[in-house]
Image 1: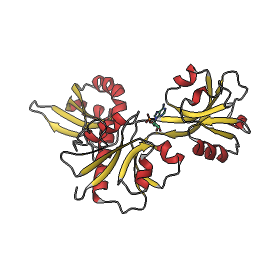
Image 2: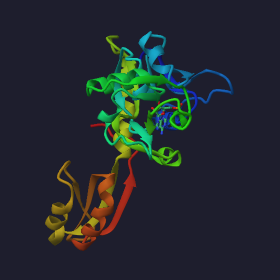
Image 3: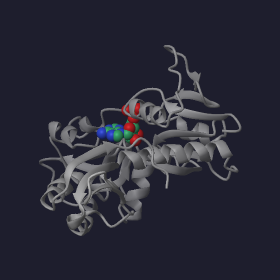
Image 4: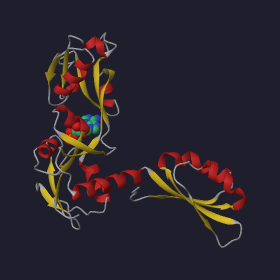
Length: 285
Ligand code: AMP
């Protein structure tokens, strides 16, 4: 990287650990900040790190205080921050859902028309409901949104849900999903992307692609080669290497991690032996 880059990382909460792990996985060696220290740097790259609450990251990026940062897409959308989403990071996945108590008569989102909705995402909720022709009275709440109906503060809630267990525990029933969120890397809009920001974005993307891939190696008799190749996913061309033993080759292939469990028995049935799967560190294409 040719010039110093400033990056904001979530200092606490759900996005903190996976964001740190992702940055480390690129190989840039971030230095852990001391307790209550908000800034750090990287041992082997010209990157300065600023640790902020995930909610504050988009504003710092928008205002040009930092070049890029990691936050939740819901937080970017809530205040319509003027930033570019450079990369979807695949963790921190959750959805903004509308829910009512089990005994409520509402069955669809449309049934929320004219009712009171408690949420910590008031702007996004209003926008998304209005886009569906639903007008509701929004009650802004900053935490524990799920108890609002029980306290009589609202008829329904709109809140982030990942497993749905908080809704169930609080006797709530989902009426539907308004918005899907995940952690994202954001950069200042319109700012001429610096070379260093592009390099970092590419490196982070290479880790994400690597995580969803596996390197597969196996030995195959040449007489069984066609059958084995027919089983391998079509994308990418496998490497075929002759082995010392006549009539035997090794096949190397990059395959989607999610396919591995179903591929292995098929490859074995086709005659492949010594089948290995290896994790991939980084994948640039
Ligand atoms: P924090 O409040 O710092 O833990 O982070 C909140 C961010 O984590 C949210 O803005 C979402 O982007 C993300 N997130 C992922 N799953 C959930 C969830 N089940 N509840 C709240 N936030 C979630």
